[in-house]
Image (cartoon, rainbow, N blue to C red; front, side, top):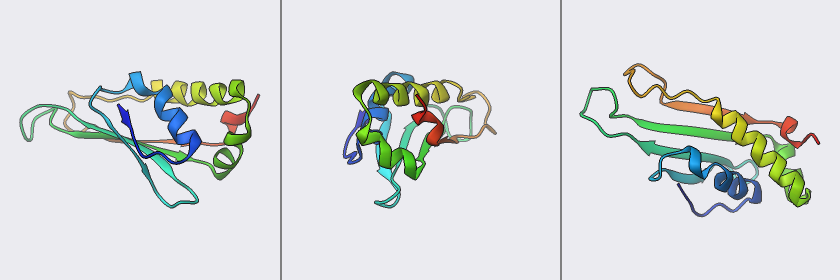
Length: 117
């Protein structure tokens, strides 16, 4: 995963925390409006057209405004806790590469509960 051009601290830190959960060639982008940026991780699996595996995959991480506002003011320990909580949410994602009808876009809503001590 190559986190590039991530302007918001929480997006940058979370992307780096998740680096080993996604394929090495995954792309990372900041998407959305300036006031409410989101993190988008995408990759493509190999295969032949119209067969399982030839699919573009993605995870859209949507951050609550409170998380975006408060994260930069957290201690290093607090920031690490937030990243670990988002990492745990990401581990629950199920990518069924063998099923041609599987959802290839998943959404993770990162709400204020990740800020709890």
